[in-house]
Amino acid sequence: MKKTMKTVTPPAPATKTSAKKTAAPAVKKTVAKKPPTIITVHANIGFGNTLYLRGDGPGLNWDKGVPLDCLSDDKWSLTIEHTTPFIFKVLLNDLVWCAGDDYIAAPGAGLDITPEF
Image (cartoon, rainbow, N blue to C red; front, side, top):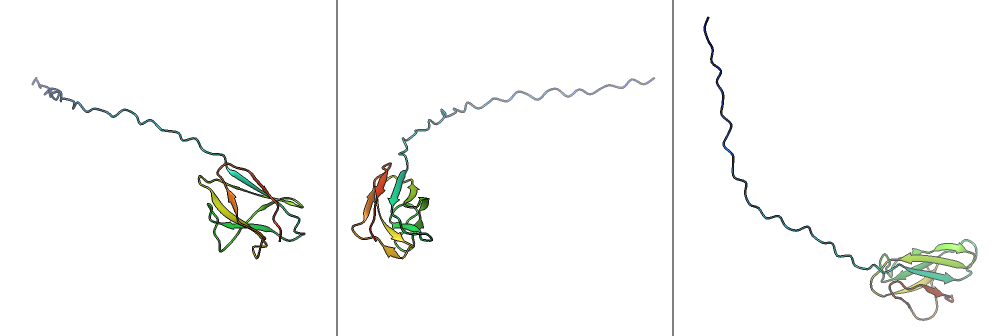
């Protein structure tokens, strides 16, 4: 009977591991976020009409208004998140500008206004 020999492959030599320095995990800085500004407009403008805001704030522009939410017959509201003061004006049906000066909204401030048309 013929003897067969098994060939054994020796294990591969160990490799040196590189001494990479791992960076410390980044620490996230949390910036205190100001609460949103809630603009509440008191105006009884009649059934079927809507109040709008135009201005230079986030999501606003002077060419086309953003509709306010109707809360009751004479109460309208819009919530805006911003970090710097902005100027705005109220319009009836996005056509008729309210009388008087522009309004200024400070970050995190609540505004209750009663415009005249």
